[in-house]
Image (cartoon, rainbow, N blue to C red; front, top):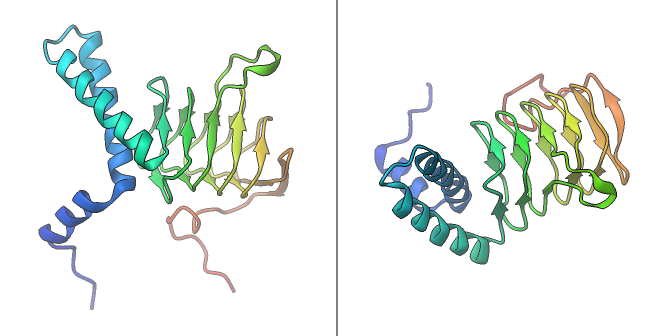
Length: 183
């Protein structure tokens, strides 16, 4: 027998109590508020004020920051929101971030570029991704890695400095897309 879909009450309870969802929703609302501002909408000022208030609460309580200049594709999943900092960056679809992840510009050395992460990227706890690096689709970045160089598609990287330790790596189970069962 197939499992039934969650009830409306269960979905509402999730939306009201899941703080990881609240963090992503606040970011998405901020994107909407900035879009209203760019279009000179009369709703821009109140929307920006609400976003600023909500963002301060989330930053203070959840220790999570997402820069307004970040561009994040659909399906972002924060496994543990605490200590996550996303500065100016481009993040693809269906990426998974764990606690204490930092993604952003590297100021030292004059590198003004931003990290660009592909689709289906998994980032382990404590990982740092800085500078004008490109991370390919389907990459897994191990816990504690410090990444400052480009990574091709479907690789597993680890270490400080991070280096490729496996090519043609399938991270689909890590990001919840199924994949091949382990034998």
